[in-house]
Amino acid sequence: MTIAETVHFGRLSLPNSAVRARIAEALFRHAVRTLPVRVTLPGGERLGAGGPEAPVMRIVRPQAFFHRLGVDAKIGFGESYMAGDWTSSQLADVLTPFARRMATLIPKPLQAFRRFVDLRQPSAERNTVDGARANIHRHYDLSNDLFANFLDETMTYSAAWFAPGSTDLAEAQRRKIDGILDYAGVREGSRVLEIGTGWGELSIRAARRGAHITSLTISTEQKALAERRIAEAGLAHLAKVELMDYRDATGTYDAIVSVEMIEAVGKEYWPTYFAALDRLLAPGGRVGLQAITMPHDRLMATSDSYTWIHKYVFPGGQLLSVPAIERHSRLRIAERRSLGLDYAHTLRQWHQRFEANWSTIAAHGFDGTFKRMWEFYLGYCEAGFRSGYLDVWQFGFEKAR
Image 1 (cartoon, rainbow, N blue to C red):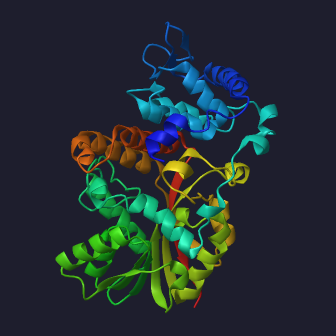
Image 2 (image 1 turned 45 degrees about the vertical axis):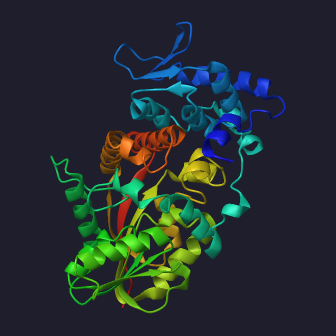
Image 3 (image 1 turned 90 degrees about the vertical axis):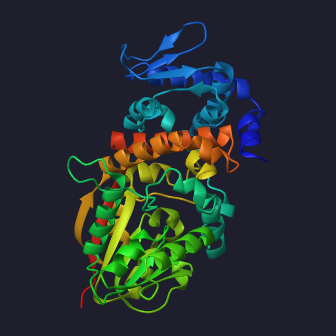
């Protein structure tokens, strides 16, 4: 079944869908009545507490919209945007107020029923060695050309770190990478392991410091492009890329770096991931880790839920909280910094580039439903970081000698 077929037919035929839709409509109206947005419906009805300057959410097909919310709000809200049931020219601005009140959009007495209505993550998306490869393939192997058309020249797919007053995305990405390499103490002669290659920019910058770096990826598309970029930079003698799961890694390294890969590990395998860091790191070594986080109470409440992001973007993914990272790691956190607002700026630039280059992206075989899916993904994530519901941290860990 294609993405479009999944969106248009979904699970709208479930029994009692009309009852679910009425309940969903009542909850939605209750949720938006105090939000600083303007919600418009056919016929001129308006909802929300936003004034003339507030961002506008236009519900085009109310019946389909509320049916999808009734089936599963966590998935249906995004599917409705993909299907065109609602739209907005200010997507991240509309979604930010929802994100700010994520924990209270559903009245507290009704939150107790979450376990009866929330879908659970499919067992097929568990991050076993084979499952992780399949999950990564569904996102990162979509097309190198797709990513090249909204990322900057560094091909870096994670939060940038902007210098004060700067809007240069490539410069901010290199600053971020240098920050994580500094946290890991990477210098000339360092033996470095990177878990999660991306498209090679971190390996290139580590090698330019004179370090010997081994980078692990389970994406064939990323490996091919990263190796090509490393070779073109004349650094193949210092940097190598291996198609390998972190669980299979061997050896001892002075430094380990991992940038926004831990979100793909899955809660079940967090202990395995942190044990691998400890096992592979030499005494006195350091780790530079960049991780997206959510509030710990929300992690505890939602960690088993199956969401729109799981279904369409990152199967098997799970964000951590700062306390979860602190509890699972055997290494001491020596340094840390938050880049949450920098991620919001990063995502906005990605969204702008995606829209500007859509005709080129579409030429690679991506359709209008995919376009709306990607718009919602980028806007949804930007709203999360703008609202403070999501954050991203750089951590510097150290191992005792």
